[in-house]
Image (cartoon, rainbow, N blue to C red; front, side, top):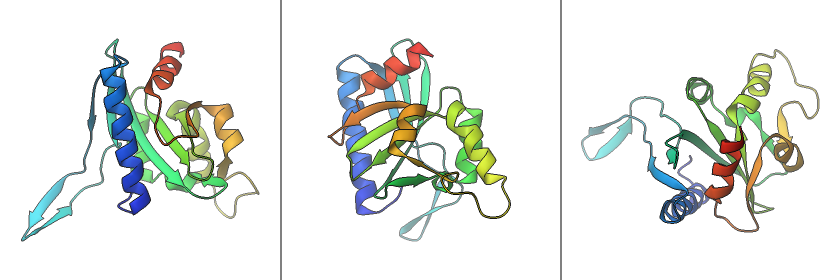
Length: 167
């Protein structure tokens, strides 16, 4: 996640949704994952690339790792997933990428097992990508994943949990 104001709003909304999903019994537990930090003087400095943003444990104890992304454009660029994040997501079972379209106020959960091959194809490409190959529209993301919020900033974790249980 970013440290921008909109990134902080996404973080707060995601955590509020996680708390609500846990209270409603959709999640057993969740936690925010942080990169390794070192304190130097009065500042904390990131010393290593971080893990995915969240780990949610579903009621059946299935782990779901979540990398949350947001943007304000009509297309979400695949390059928003950094190489170290792609590596982490590939190594984790049940990894999801949550992409929040700010303009439409819609969030889509895309399983990494679906998005990963497309990301790897893009990352391995030399030269300029053809139109539409390096990004996703909201409609394309909906075809690949599950809409977990629409018209509100909060992720409906019961929808995400249901989509994962159906896999």
